[in-house]
Image 1 (spheres, rainbow, N blue to C red):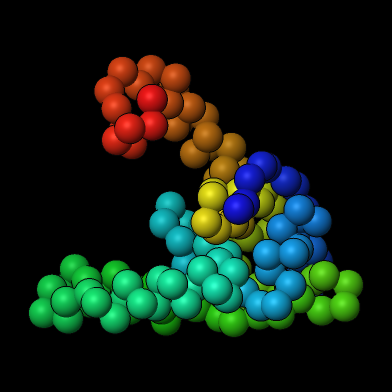
Image 2 (cartoon, rainbow, N blue to C red):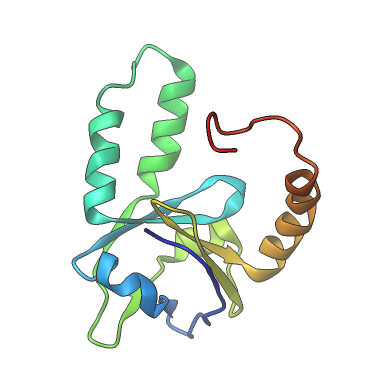
Length: 143
């Protein structure tokens, strides 16, 4: 499970050292792809295989499904951390997420997310007020 917030740096070659707490889960491979809100999703190889099972069940007659799958899967890149635990973020994904040197990596349960730090801070500021003022059950049975 991926939890927490971290602030690694992107090096000049487009590589990032993911948080030590994520290494066991990601050491045998991962998939990095476009996420929503212009972040990147990082799935363990095992979790991405679970997603693939669900993807194969999606109706191809739904334009919304096709559009989502095209964007989600066309950006997917399999990566294996190098001996120094660095992962290369492909140029097209760095551009999509607007990544510069300053990154924020968050744990989001079944995945990690990589954000441009300014974008994360703006998102957090906007979403936190809604989170604090939530009066309805958002996730059934959670609270």
